[in-house]
Image: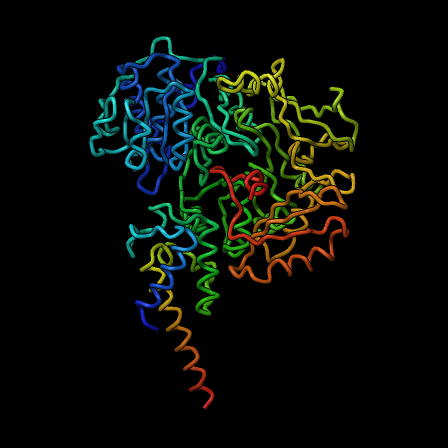
Length: 505
Length: 97
C-alpha cells in the first residue's frame, strides 16, 4: 500500500529519467538529475553523525538544492525542517533549540548573513562558501559525493515523522506541525484526484516550497510525473505571466494577494493562456468581487477555490469549479479521503445557517505540534483536527468560512465578521488590500478600524474616499471609526495578514 | 532633467520606503530582485511614486525587471518615458501649426 511507503520513493518512483521535473530560471532538471542530486544528500546524511529521526534545518529559497535537500532528508529517514531564507535570527535560534538540530542545509547567502546562528552545526551550503571556523563542519552541495541507490535500510515510512513545518498562522508564536510520511502521501493522492493531475501538467510555482501550499505543488506534480516551473519574480507579474505562456504552464497556484495583484495591476485580462487548464487559490479568503473578476479574466480555465491548513498537511476542502458562481464564497466540500464536519459548542453538527467549528478527520491530519503538548491537545483530539475556523453549512452541504475564531468584532452586541467588512471595502477599485480590526468604543462596545492599501501611492485623501465609499454600503454602526492608509499590510512570509501586529500598531 | 538629480530622488524614495535609511550598501546597478529589497506590493509603491512624482504613466506591460529592477534601470526607463512624452507633445505642436 502506498501509505506505508517512504514519501520520497512514493513521489519519485517509476519516473522516466529524461522527463523534465523542474524548470528554474537558472536551468532545467530531469527526474534523473533530481534523483542523482537526492542521492548526494542521502549519502551525506547517512555518513554524517546524524541518526534516523534527527531534525535537519533547511533554510533556502526554491532551488534544486532545496528540492534535493528536502526529499533527500526524508529519504534518509531524517526529519526536514524547512524555513524561509529571510527568517529572523531570533526565530531561527529558537527553532534550532527546540528541534535540537545539529545539521543544516543552507543557502550560502543565508549563511553569510546569519553565520552565528549556525555555530557548531554541520552545514551543507548550496554552493561553495567562504569557510567559517565557527561551524562544526562545512561542505558544499555540488561537491558532495554521488550516492548509489542506497536502498536506505530501515528508512522511515508510514507514521514516522517526515517534516516539521513551522507556521506562524494568523495568531501567536510559531508552532511546528509534525507531518508524517503517510500524511504527505494521503494528501498528495487526494489533491491529484480532485485536480485530475497527470504527467502532462506543468504548474507555475511562485509560492515558496517551505510553505505547505508550495510543498503540495511540488508533491503532487512530482508524483504524477509532471513538471514544476519555478519563478520567484512575482514582484514583476508581467514576466511571470510571459513565462507561463512560453513554458506552456497548465496550472497556476496562488494566495489571495497574488490574484489581487494580477487582477488590479497586470495584463492578465489582455493575455491569453491557451494551455492553462486550472488555477488553484488557497491560503486565505479571496473576496467575492475578485473571484468573479478572475472567472471573467480566465474564461477557459477551471478555478479551484480551496481551503486547508498546515495541520492537515495542506488541503482539506475544494469547491468544484462548476460551482464557483452558484456557491460563490464557499470553500466547497471535503477532498477525497477527508471527513469535514461543522460542530457547534455542544459538539453537534450544525443546522443550516448555524455557525460552528470545522473539524477534520483523515489520514492527512498531522500528528500534533512539536513539543507543545498543551497546544496539541487543544487542536488534535481523538485523531480529529479542530481547525479553529468557524463556518456554516448550506442545505447542499457546502461549507462557508465565517471567520477565524478570533476575527470578529462585537458591535452593539452583535458579532460582526471582519471579513464581511473587508469584502465591502475591497469592492472599491481604489484599494488593493484591506484589513479590519475591532477597537474599543464607548457607545458600540467595539467599532471598526480599517487598514487600507491604495492602488496609488498617494495616501493623502484616500481615507476620505474610502469613507465616502463605505457610507453608501455599510450601516452607520459598521462605518469605520478610523481608516489608516498604509503602504502595505504586515504579512508573514506565506502572505497571511498579521492582524495581531495591526492590533498592536 | 539632470540624471544625477533624478537618480537621487529615486534613491531617496527607495531608501525611505524600503530601507529605513540604511542604504549605503546598495549600488545603483544592484538588482532589487537578487537583493530581496522590494516585494510585489513594494513594486506597486515604486510605480505609484514614479507616476505621482514625475507625471508619467507606467503601463502594466512596462512593469518588468528590464525597466524597474535597479536604480539605474528605473532612471533610464524614466528618462525614456519623459523623452517620449516631450517629443509627443512637440509633435502635437507641429501638427497644430
